Amino acid sequence: MAERLSREQLYELVWTQPLKVLSALRHIRCNLCAKSDIPTPDRGYWAKKEAGRHVIKATLPLRRPGMSGDILVAGGRHYWYRQWSKDELLGPLPEPPVFPEPLEAVQIRIAKIIGKVSVARDYRIWHPAVDRLLKADEMRLQKQAASSFRFSWDDPIFDTPFERRRLRVLNALFLAVAKMKGRPEIRGREGREISITFHQQQVAITLDRPKSKSQRGQHADTDPDKLENRLRLAILASSGSEIERISWSDGDRKLESNLTDIAVRVVLNAEIAHRLSAQRHYEWRVKIRAQLEEEERNRRSAAARAETERLARLEQERVDRFSMTPERFGRPVISAPMSAPCKLPKPGTRPSPGRNLIDGRPGP
Image (tube, rainbow, N blue to C red; front, top):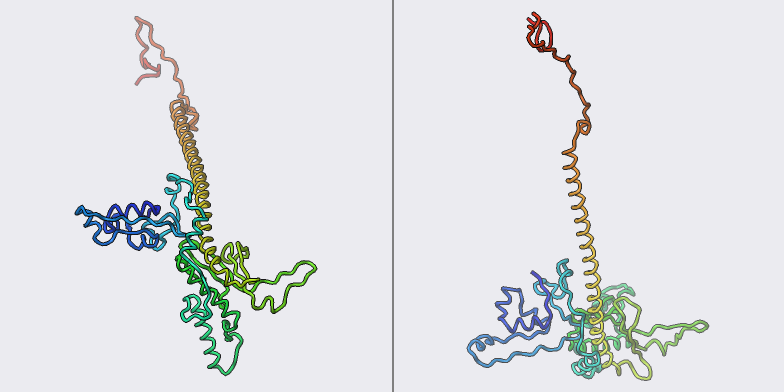
């Protein structure tokens, strides 16, 4: 049966009993601990402890940015999410989410792990997400070379200086966020839909030419020297959204000079999204719990009202059963015909012959 535990609870469990025992009893396995960045005892730890030898208990590392503090045990491939059951929602409410580490400290920790991010002039080994784009471009070139007809659809996309620079920036960014377990994904033929997943949080970004903006009474800036080779990177509110949280672009300094700050902000944005999500989830649980409790009260009230009405009907039927008259059955009242009064002979006299003493009719 699936159950939810915090990182701290799971950490204490794996250092209290061997994983072999926990796997049989509660389906807790080593890969689940690895996904949640929870250290497990080394081989021979329990034998040394049983023998009374000195053992070292590894400390629980800080939660990585974007990682959930709750873990779903025995939840199948959905190790961190499963639809909440009614019993869980009606169960005890947890404390409101609290994050002891300030965002400023998280940002400093991210910067130390990532280090300085720079863009090389050329890469021999590309990140797999970027390498897929280059291989698709190479296949288009081969198809174009093998065909006697040239179609614009088969023209290479990433062979211009602007596109090559764009891929180099993406490659440097992807390698940097990989140190924080970031998993990039590029979608679309031209590679314009970009997202980076940090555990359970996804950060959407865009990297392209800046959009030309025109104001009333002014023309859009269409100078090729200003727009054609400029790059602009923005962190979006969500995938597919046009709302930008923060952006950087070429100006007095090139975008590449800000790449270290960009990588740190991308990872930090995952942590911010996690904290907002945790707060919204807590508020949702409070609201749903109140609704379920109201529905339960209404159900009990309706059941009590129905039971009262049922008992009243039974009582009325009992009363009616004891006070029934023939008219209540729907039958007419039938009166038996009264016979003539019986005339008894006076004392000392004999009855007349041939007359019945009971009804006065002639006898046999």
